[in-house]
Image (cartoon, rainbow, N blue to C red; front, side, top):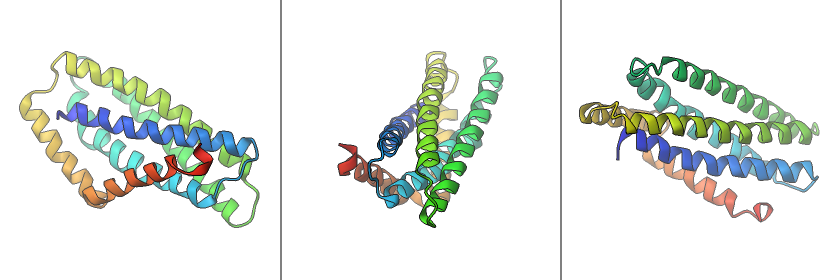
Length: 183
């Protein structure tokens, strides 16, 4: 698998999380009960899988390797700004979730930030996928560069607990998708 394809595969997982966040937001807005622990799991997956792992691969390795090619610097600058937006939404979600767990009714802001994150995911991954398609179609990365990027991705795995932790994150997404409130 190429380094670019690896990131597109991550996007499939990230969009699954976006769908969960949207459904959770809809249920909260309709005053349906959602276990706070499930919302906390969403928040942890956002922090660990999306931000630390996936965005880490893009920011630390992939974007620096591609930004000086085919005038991609402006696209990459926009992606980095969007990553920061996603982090801010995630921080606000986490802050309101913590407040809710301490007894303050924060249903509405938690629902709002879940919805905002779901919208962010859909929009952002769509734009990045188009960018990744351009990189692949134009053969921007050589075989050697792809191999180097994949090797760097391994260090990103290690920084968040290795492949086992990634597998745990995916299992948590499976768990959330199968919760009664998701049906």
